[in-house]
Image (cartoon, helix red, strand yellow):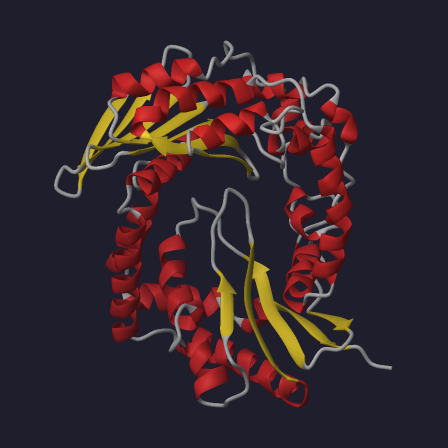
Amino acid sequence: MFLILSTFANAMELQVEELPSGDSIVLVQDARSDVVTMEVRFPVGDFSPAWQATHLDEIWSFQAYDPDGALRLRAEALAAEVGSVVSNRSATLGAICLREDMLACATLLGDILHSDALERDELKRHRRTQWGDWEGLLSDPEFVLRQAAEQALFVKGDPRRMDVEKPRRLDLRVARDPSAKEAVLALPNRLMGFSGNLSLDDAVALTALFRLPEPSERGPEWTVELPALSDDVPATVEAELPELTQVHFTMFRAGLVYEDEHVPHQHVAHHVLVGHFYSRMYRALRHDSGLSYGVSGSNFFGLSEPCYRISSSSKVETGDQAIAVMRETMSTYASEGITVEEHEQAVSHLLGLHAIRSSTPWSLTSTALHEVQFGLERDHLGALKRAAAELSVEEINAWIASFYDPEAWSLVVVRPETD
């Protein structure tokens, strides 16, 4: 497969090339940039049972920490930013460097990927701090809100709860034998992403320096199988924290997956309700009533249902009143929907924001990598925004009436601890 898309008056070119190995190269070429980005992405993340069982978080996160520090010294000498990232379904090692250093930088990434020694002392330092970090989160009302909502929506053992549950203890033994990483390197359908002033031939040459092994079969141990959402989500969850001066609260429900036909509806509906300073919920809780300083909403989509939340806070003595206003605003929104003017403003915002987020070669590369990994059409995210412009207000309002019905939402409230 070979695809070229010209954008921004031909200043940038997106190219996707499938290699004989089944791996793919994604390149956004921009002759104006002397900065080159490169990354190699493996199609497995911390939702995978094998990833969790073999403590691959430790290995992946600390693979640049060799005992004598040589790998990090090489990165410093190149003035290159090197980093590794693990998400739910992918593991990435990447770098940013000058074009003149891209060969040396790609060689460094290859050496990091094949490094078989971890600095045990670095693992120890992080293990000493992880419990303090966890205790700090437990005293943060915003985290407690999110924790309660996700633990209510996702059943015990669901990987989607991992980021709000007590972290497991870092395993120092992986420093002796990080060989589990070799299985990750050999997974099929790997992706290599590049951006900047380089050609496709340059990208192929850089890919060779990663020295990836021949891909193997993907075993079932790498497959993510998520359980169904809880069928017993309570209507209200109450929690207490000491020394609070405000009541914090969030309404939550299951969100949408990428392929849901109502994602364009949701883009518009979320923006009108909570997406800006003069949104419906902001006006109700701050401008009109003075009950809160602000409102936030977690509007994102995934391959599985996320926890979609709308949150705020108020003084202790007005907390219940603020919660009632949030519920009433949601109810009115469900029954009345949006106006033509609100639809036009939301679409203008969505399309403008998408253009801004697509204005750099590295952002285009990141988006294209995501699309290729999950089999989405080119510019899938942009198409969803454009689809929102084609919807009628009546179509959006019909969906809002169901999705934003307060009866379909639950509530978490965090109050000051009582004696």
